[in-house]
Image 1 (tube, rainbow, N blue to C red):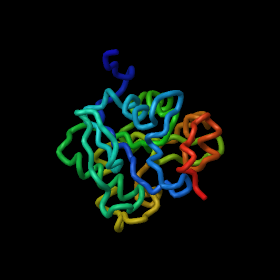
Image 2: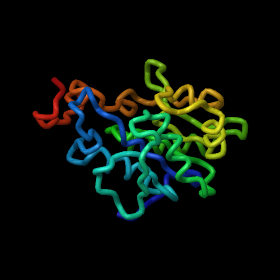
Image 3: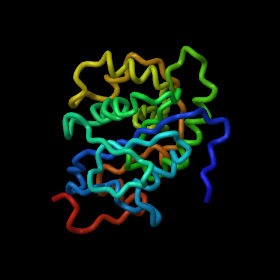
Length: 208
C-alpha cells in the first residue's frame, strides 16, 4: 500500500521512544509484542509513515526498516525525557516544522496519530504543540505533536534529562490538549495491560 499523508497534515519528523527496562513485564522488549498480529513497533512505524524522517530511540535488538534511524538515549536507561532529548538531537539538521513523539508500546497509535496531526495543522502560532489526554484528563506527552523549534528550546532549557519526568522537560511549552478515547492512549506497562487488549506475553517473560 503506498504511503498516504494524513489529510491536512503538516510536514513532520517522528521520534519513537522504544527503550525502557519493562521491569513489570519481566524485562522483555515490549515493543515486539503483537497486537492483532502486528508487533507494536510496526504499528508505531505505520502511524508515522508519512514523516520526513523517523528516529527510534532505544530498541537495540529491533530490526528496523532501512529509512528508520536508530539512536540510544544518553545516558542509557536514562528514561523517556532523555530519549526525547536524544531523539531531537539526532534530528538537529532537519527543517520539518513539527515533530511527533510517541511511545513504542501504544497498540492504538494508528488511530491517535491522524487526529493529532490534523489538530497540529490548525494550531495558532503561539501554541507549541498538541498532546493527547485520556478521559480522566491524564496528559500523554509521549503521544503528541510538537513544534520542532519549541521542542528543541525546551530540551536546551531543561536540567539534565536523566530520570527527569517528561512533564518537567516540557513544562515551558504552551500545549493544546486533545481528548482521545482511553484505548487510543493506553500503553502496555503491565501483564494486566497486555491481557486487557488481548496481547499474549511469553510465559518466561512475565514478572515474578
